[in-house]
Image (cartoon, rainbow, N blue to C red; front, side):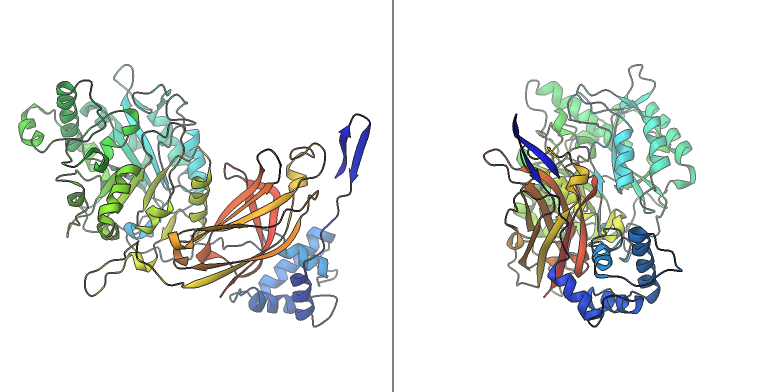
Length: 590
């Protein structure tokens, strides 16, 4: 990699050497060429089917791979040689586009109701940064849609003139963006990454006349793309397949919003100076409170619950609702009544969406975990970040998925391990934004029992992971990014995020002064719930005595892993893929 300065008058020189193919690669080449020096398309096909477990591979696939590798490495035309050398074979195995760790196609059944899927969900999708004073824009919405996010959230507030509608985080210093700009951007980019439906959840703080204006905006912007329910209450959600290329509106119906608003005004007038984050409709302690859509932003210090008596007392004082706006709502946010357990009750002929903040959800699964699983078999449950996440951080998502929660609303503009896990989950199923729940979350026993997330389970499957080597940092980073005085000392951390019994993290040895480290270490992971396990991979540069430096990461859904030797691309802290950085690894299920 050149010379590194040690002092003013002394330099150390390091040679950048190419790592030779690992022993397993050499052995595979020797075996399938039967000791020869060149691999034909037929021999490559045998390797793909037997060695890589790509049972659907065809001779056409093998010929395409062979042609691409030869063209990239030697600029060989179809009239020149048509076999691979060992180095060509190694190049193929280390190519992320030809030999990636997971598939790129939608392969799950998409004809089940929406409630049977985990759905890629954003929180405050319009914010460019923190929750208090960042700008509001359509740019993060577009980025999220291009990543495959299928549910975006817009907070609607009257503009300064009370005649237009703004999107902003209410009662904060965030700068607004026009609603119509967000709607047009959603229309343009909704299906750039996936054909499956986009759900727009609205937090509505509007008067009836502005609701009518919003209804007109939405109708004119989306036209035939909008999904209109056949009846006001759906007995079952439609499927993603039925809703391809459709846009769905989800919020609390106007009448219920106005009831909640009226209740909030009463509470604020009678309890000035008290914490207004409590939802007074819930006859439970504050930390058990269920926040529904109009109360979704407890982080801005407001409460929009409605007491049980408000409905009868305030009916005559309430302004008329906007009928056109109400008819746009395909997924109704349910109105709570009677406490947390009652809110998780499954209605026989009606489905809805319930929203909880992460703290209330923690209480729900502590006391009613099976009720949560049962509720999410038919209805949609949305969990959003707690009030104090001003920096747009996120909670840990695995506990939500273990309880069947479909809509884990995340701040997509942030970064951190929780968001890396979210990215990893939705790399599954071709990255389409909908991942089918495992059967155990949907099944009901003959005795009417559902899955217990706290049950102790036996090991169902064992995953063996080998980390061979890494490459590409010298292309994506400056020579002195990691160390001014020598090449980096890389090590890899490999582990599992999933069920409590499956969580673990292990690491390789540190390889000193090498931009192309070779580890060749194997790790074994017994899994009790492989259907929800994510393989965590992180690379760091050892930097004693300071904090080790980040050098790449990825999370992969274990149930989607392709067995055999694979090239694994790495991503930066924000989840953006590096151009060159990758690892050569192998995966095997026992």
